[in-house]
Length: 156
Image 1 (tube, rainbow, N blue to C red):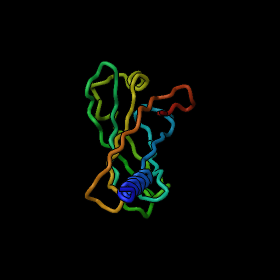
Image 2: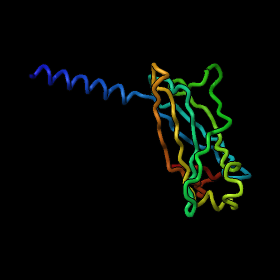
Image 3: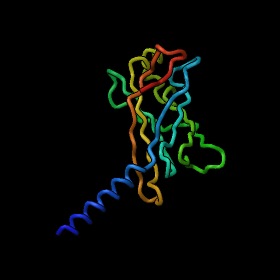
Image 4: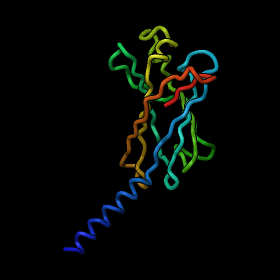
């Protein structure tokens, strides 16, 4: 009975250890220099020290008071470091844009006012390490447009 319990604890500890080493994306934004607050370059970084973030598909979700169920918008202009094919190695960063300005044209007329009263979420779907048949989904947010820093930027 003691050996069976020890084996279960060992398997659980190994599973927990493997799960805690999984790649997790971390997001930051560049400053809003001019134009629309939605035309910003965002950075995604693989925080894992062990595993690549393979085939990430990033979506941007804007929540705005008074508007329900705004569509999820796939990221555009996704770039990875040179030499990598659709993955971020441990510690590497890539960039992307959220084409919210185009996707929400006509729905939300005042871009700056909308951005200041909105929250932005990111959802990434990527391959589980060592297999491309299982996928992980990670959601991060909310990010808000912080106009108290210069230049303004989307921050958590």
